[in-house]
Length: 227
Image (tube, rainbow, N blue to C red):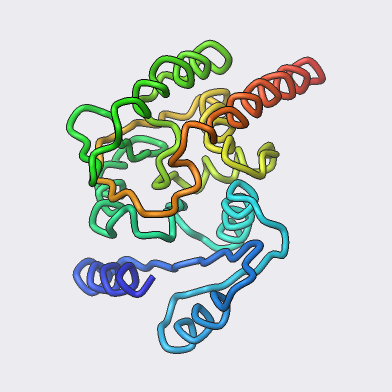
C-alpha cells in the first residue's frame, strides 16, 4: 500500500490528477486493520472499510459501491499482495483512452509471469476453464481473473447493482455484465509476480470454481427471463 501511495503521489505531482486508495478488509482475523489504520493516519488519500464477511467478490463490490459515492472518473481494483506493481497498474490508466475499461492479463501475448507457472496449470485452464467460460458467457479474454482491472465510472455505476457473486467467480460475472451492457473492455498484457500462498495456485481450487460458473450461468439466465 505504501508503494502504491508513493507512486501515485508522484504521478499527481506531475500532472495534477487526484487519487484515493480504498482498502477493503473482509474477514480479517489478524492485525491487518491496525496496520492499515496506522498508515491511513500517516498518509493522505487512504480510506478503510472493514467487513466481517469474507469473499473477494464481496470486497470488490463493497469497494465499488463506496467509490461511486464520490466523483471518481476511474474505478478499479488490484490484489493487495503486490503481484501487480503500481507502474503496471498505471499502464491500465494510460491505455484507457476511448475504452470503457482495461483489464490486465497474465496470458495475453507479451505478458510475463514471475516465476513462470507450471505448464500443467496453464494448460488445465486452457483446456477446461476458458472453453467453459466462452461456452457459458461468450467471453473471449485470455485471462479473466487477473487481479488488476480498471473501469470508467459509468461502467461501475451500471454493473455494480447487478453483481451478486461473493467469491472468486466474480470476475466472470463482472465482465459478463460489461458485455451485456455494451461496454468496450480491452485486455492488455502485464507483468505479474506470483505470490506464495495464493489461494488459487492449485488445480484443486478449480473444481469449485467450475461449479460456481455453472451456477452463475443458471442464475443469470433466470434473471434475463425475469426481465
